[in-house]
Image 1 (cartoon, rainbow, N blue to C red):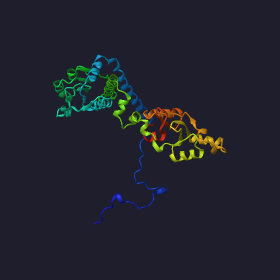
Image 2: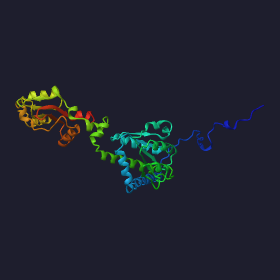
Image 3: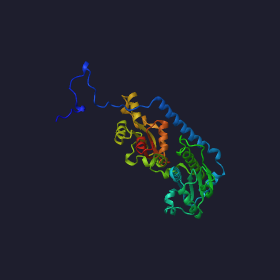
Image 4: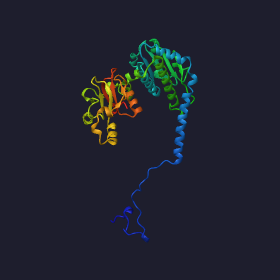
Length: 361
């Protein structure tokens, strides 16, 4: 019995009439869609509305700064233990940031997760601690469950909330209103303006606390030794300067040939000129040599260090901050500073390149 031909395989292999090419069977390549100008404009307009809404939420806090803020500040200043910050969800994330800001500005602080708190972590909390609780609604279940224990410990409670009549507010010793009229997101369900307002108020508390306690830049550096700011505020000239045999030295009567040899061997682009007592008389730099060879090429090697040195060069003390040395170098467009003591004796050489390597610049 003969099988009927398969329609999918039917074909004679001949070109269609008129020489037209057979229809391509491969899928055509798709190009990635590009945003239309209208879509881009809409996205930028939405982003602008979000930023404006959050900015307005923060601005609206200013008229609400009152005696409650001052009471919160007094509690924080008088805290003999730690500041324990707590909150759930996005409020918890903001709480972690506030806790970190407080800790980095001299106030011992930690974050307590409410859900972990009701399962044992309330042991982190003591009666000498001050609690800062964040909740926009003031009714967050996990947070509400730990409020009786906070009261039982008699730990002062400061709340940042958008609902002054909430359970959280009723338990609190201080209620700071951080409520917003609307969230920045179109759906009104994504915490945006409310979290921005809470974080800004947390920063306001932290900065006011810094000011009240007289927290200085040097104190900040002590808590940030690994950062660029820490290096700028902690590193001293004596930590970076070249000392001992690494210091290039010549006498005022040293011939130019020996001046050049001393500068070449020490590789600092200069040499100090000192008297017999080691007191600084001047400095000779690469720039001085270039100018000498340019203007007096025939007599250059007949001169001495005293003939071309810069008298009274820029100097610095060893206990000054390295950051100040950078400032002096930038102000006078120089690469090296001579480090001297009170007797004008040379103690070291500080080069800009060394400060660059140490991350001070």
